[in-house]
Structures are given as structure tokens and as C-alpha cells.
Image (cartoon, rainbow, N blue to C red; front, top):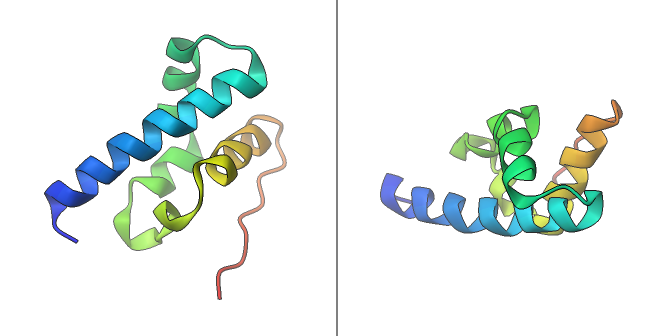
Length: 78
């Protein structure tokens, strides 16, 4: 994947994930975006080699919520 393709993919993943976080937590999308961009989950997600971008936005949102609750556990990938 080229850097430009990954950047485009990250934009889409981030937008959809933030929408799900806002829905689940009742936070505004702006607040959800700021918190997500500062999270450990996002730091891993933006590293293309982590392959975390393969996860669904629903799973990424749940990982973020788990991180916020202090119980982040990454799923095992085969």
C-alpha cells in the first residue's frame, strides 16, 4: 500500500471509528476525535505495519473504550 493510500484509508477508518465512539459514549464527535487521536489505540492504528487497520471500526471503537476503562486487551491475530 502506498503512503497516500494508507493516509486515505486512515481518514475513513478514523471518521467511522469516531462516529461509533461518540454514539456509544454520548460524547460530541469533536471530543471523541480529540480523545481518540491521543489514545494508544490510535498510535498503534496509525502504524501501518501493526495491521490494526484490518480491524472493523466497531472493534477499534471498542478497543478505544476498553483503553479508556483501563482494560485494553488486543485481539490475537492469526
